[in-house]
Image 1 (cartoon, rainbow, N blue to C red):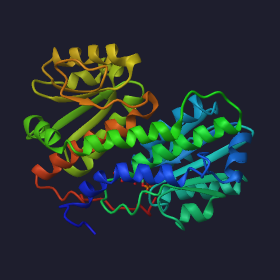
Image 2 (image 1 turned 135 degrees about the vertical axis):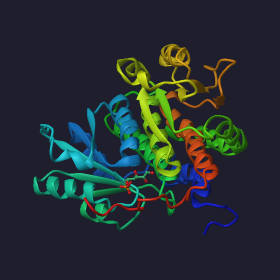
Image 3 (image 1 turned 120 degrees about the vertical axis):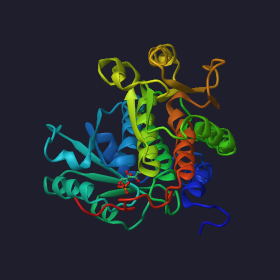
Length: 357
Ligand code: F6R
């Protein structure tokens, strides 16, 4: 039930800190160790490459997860859009593990890949919010998101839950392999949950940014580098699907190779700057679009901020920044859709689970 909320989407955005805390609880045992099925641990230890298969928002979570698996667990990982996988099947490694990420567990595009790779005899792990869903039943192993039912068509809390569970999986694997890790996942996720809560309390500030900058625009760009780029893809999808503003997420350095031609007087360009390594370069990309008339809004992380930034995000571990930077992006989409009179929870042409290929 929506309770006092006008929309499920807003309720689900607000539930994110809670969902993250539930994940921390569910994946921690009484000795503060990570709690994961021993079979999953063993499978992760022996696989030599991970193939992440997903669609839409879950695909965007996979892009972030790939970095965890490579940087923390030392396993090469690739991320594939489910509907394209069969046409361009990569050469598989000797011991591949397929990881399916799906809120609903019912996405037909992902399922058809699952059926195929099971026929080939490869192991599959599904990360899903729905226990007993098709992708969960048909895979060898399941990790649950514990995000609670997601009703709004636009996915919010499932995305952050997917990223959190992928981080836990990567850390657990690193530990099982005896790798040195300077990262306490439960502590960092706890800090992140608090930061998310700070953000969900700042709705008015985001609403004001939307009123001032996205009121009548036909299009918008989200730019970022490194991890921020992946969040930009998600931010653009969110804005498109519920407000119908044409939006594109772009790698900051790639704009000059063509897309910058679309920048006109007043074009909104939202930039994420949460990573120290790219703080300088993304800001120079912002200057390039501002010089061509763009209306910039920089969302930076505390410690990296400058006076002219539109919004400063509370600081979290650099690997976990997507969990906080996405929250104001979800709210931007929400208020943009709300002010345009769109049906926030049930955008046109879309269904909550996509059971056709
Ligand atoms: C976007 C959205 C979709 C889904 C996609 C995959 O807000 O909800 O892009 O993420 O259809 O769905 P699942 O995760 O259920 O496989």
